Length: 570
Image (cartoon, rainbow, N blue to C red; front, side, top):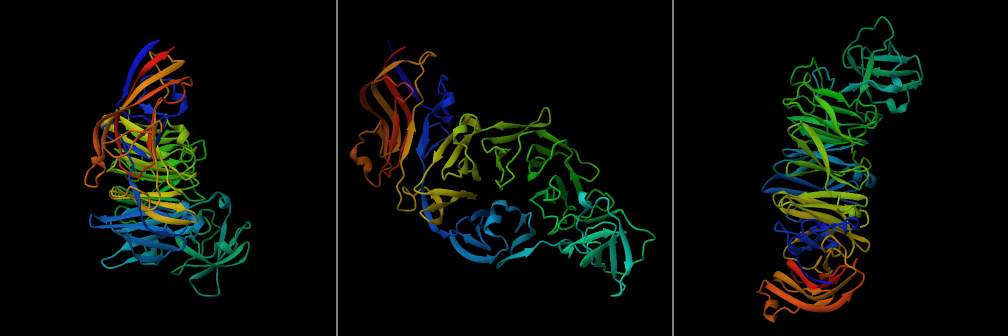
């Protein structure tokens, strides 16, 4: 038998999975619900939620920040974009996307424009002018001869097909394209082709081998059938860009349905010009990821390098400046990302944080400066039990907090402070289900489904409840006790002491800790100091926590430390 006096005054690991319950001196807990780990390592009850208004089911949130005085939150739902400023809806725009499209909608901002891409739709651009918002089709730069600077590619299913050009009776700008194999169908209408150094547009299809096309200037018939021809990389038939970013003053498109491993970069400062020209330094760039494995691009991110996340690995283009003749692209890691929905990677303290394709890892892509290569560190190695089909992710840099919404309706929350070595996971729960999360400036917004209605809400330090109506409880529970690297077989507790700060409610193992009454005054921030409770009892199930600190009262609480006094048998 031996006496023990154990104090836990730092909770830097947060809630850890049961696999780690036998590790001694781990600064974690077995449960952390509706509490945050502060930079000091202490615990604080989370803020409540302020309700803004009801929104459509399956809506998504997109931040749109033009300046410190112009911050907008976009609520995008079926065929609509609602624009909010200071939590008030100021505009609604008609949009093309259906409900099922929203989970794959990606976006990137440049100044006062937000570029949206989806593999089934021509890209759109949301622009804020001095007085209004507009949503327009993204258009490629047009030349004087009416050709446009869209990229062209050769696709595998037409690689061996030749085209014979003959004149048309319509006029000198029309022609008949006859192929040596079946190819034409109605979905070719409107597609641009690059044949015999000229752009052509398919106007109509007569048979599977005959189509009528037109160009914008007179042409000369080639002497023989042509095998060297291309078609537009982007179209309704072949698909539109999957992902979008801006890097080194170029617009970047990553992947399409038909070209999933390709990356296009626009001409410098001309975001709608993808003409590769003669390869001058400022002209457009086209690259493909060459690998023995099939790579489908998930998203592209501009960081220290242009990072390309795919279904099976993480790539980077590391040149500065990036030019057509200077493209150093390679695969660095082999984790893979989710491709079934857009989970935007987050920039955290200089690293790119993304969700792995398994949905069980949150990875931190960080550059090893010495070796000039990336590592993909697992940020949730201690908390795998929390990771279950993530559906939304956002990072609040002011709070140093990463929010990850799970399909089951709770949020896994990472409190991360590199300077104090804190990487603590916990969970947020509410009366309902979290559906989406986004950060706008310093504020964290969520969509919450309560009963059959979804609401736009945000975390607010002035709110003790959720949406003024819904109570929530907080709880933190100890890890199973380890003494001298051995698990005890019997424990008797004498006393549990808490060091508190600005606290008005706290229970230990279901027993109220009495706080002096004057601390409940509305003008009082709460009790700060040490309080204890005598808990005489013997524990035979030593896998159960010796203490749980909790409360279901809607009052503030901050826990600085928990001290347990008792004896044990090994």
